[in-house]
Image 1 (tube, rainbow, N blue to C red):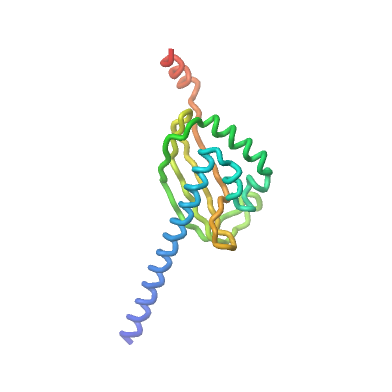
Image 2: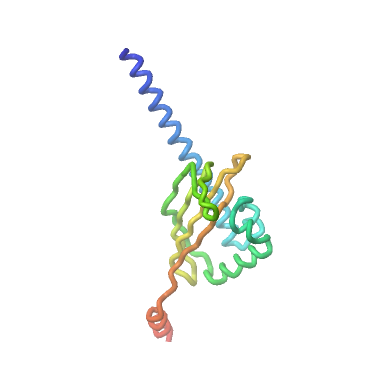
Length: 163
């Protein structure tokens, strides 16, 4: 009886370890894709970045490549030159909720969050959601940059300091 319990515990532990290793592998692979995609965006290789968007991504569903590239050009002009990026969160999830329908979608998803600094906007939080497709390749499902604009008082202070 003791050997059966020991056997069951060892199987459980090895299964948990295997799952943890797979999760870490998924995150590592997704981070590589996101890093490459962000580099394409920062280096104005927008057509290449567009090709890495998942077919069901909101940008691809709502825009053709030309419109998306124009939007990204405007965004990069507003941000200014890229300075640095640090990852602040990485998480694997087996299910997400569709923003449009509210339905739950099962699959392999990785959320990545970065704190990024650009020339014109000092701190931006960039969130990337990646999904593994049927060919086990990671694609960008969503990209969301969030930044705070300076208040009127902060702008006055900045303008006065420039004079």
